[in-house]
Amino acid sequence: MQTILILLLAASVLGLSGCGHHHHASRMDNAAERVTSADWSKQETVTVTMSDFAYAPETLVFHEGVPTRLVIENRGSQKHYFTAEDFFRAIATRKVQSNTDGEIKAPYFTAIEVYPGRSLDLYFVPITRGTYPLHCTITGHAELGMKGEIRIE
Ligand SMILES: [Cu+2]
Image (cartoon, rainbow, N blue to C red):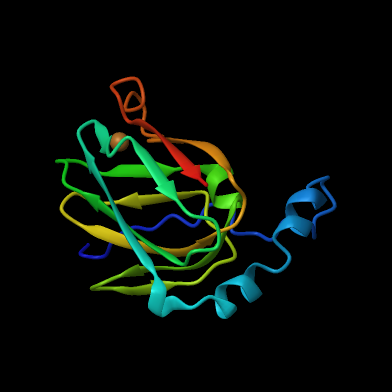
């Protein structure tokens, strides 16, 4: 399989299920509008590199309202995850793009998996200021150091 596996976990729209997540839904009701009204010619590009077993840099900083392209590069010898559920709820997601395989549009992601030697681009607008945890959800990786922090300021 040449294709990059992108996990679209929980791409369901919160708030339609009546499960008590209305505060999330209402916060991001205008996510699509935030994405289309952003000036993407002024986008900021940030790169995070995944290795066995770390993120570099360990702290990612994004700026509220500034359209952003995050390049997630896996230079390790095995697959790794970029899992940051609370962060994904704090941004308006435009898409995830692979330079070789296409792009995926979804209201939000909770985790992105990148195969070794490959990279994916996440396009988004940071919305809610805060500090959010990042980790790799493959068994043992976080304990070995695959943890980080994401700040929206
Ligand atoms: Cu990992």
